[in-house]
Length: 262
Image (cartoon, rainbow, N blue to C red; front, side, top):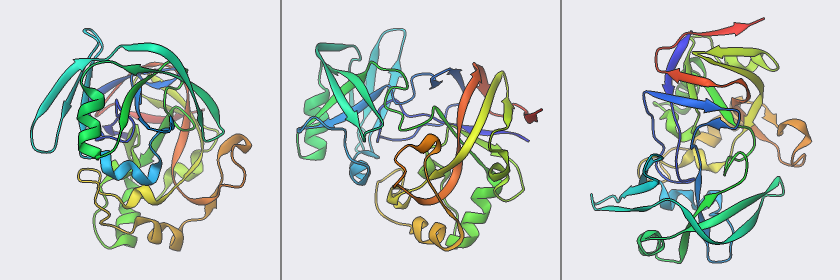
């Protein structure tokens, strides 16, 4: 097995990026979901609204603490990435409180104009940033190939926003990795249970258009799962890909070997 792809998104709900390598800390892929979008009511943009912002590509330079935004028409916006003002707290679906600060600069106008409603860009100050549950998600090429057969066409892996895609031919090999340790490059992960999926998988990761009924396929052939550690026990949907925790941080690059560790 080897790493087929790495991925992250600097601003939650926007265009998913696939760099050739990433650094992994105990809180996941470095800078992943460090920023988020806030509605006028002070809540994160809900998952069913992510499609609006998927066409927006944000890049982040930690050395200069600058963000850049590429809009669908090619226009670029650049500005600061540091938070300012009074710290805020957001209840993240009852899972935990996340500390935030709004980011100064051109972001509110640029994103609000695009969305046609008031939207603020915020920087996450808490551990795990704006990651939903566990720091890492992994999925195998075997699982993606099986899903493509169920859907009837290729399914873009970016729909699942997995930190690591692992080249493995066995269908859903990750289902058998629960509780096991997985070495990817310098990083050691502990695999948890499957990720319960939602309708976001039906949105095109580039345009945000609803163009594939991925959930219908998952409902047909995948068992329902709940979140690990009794989080949101009433939430149960078909599982696809697996959560993971970081045991040893380090660098992971495309092509790095992957192996289960006793």
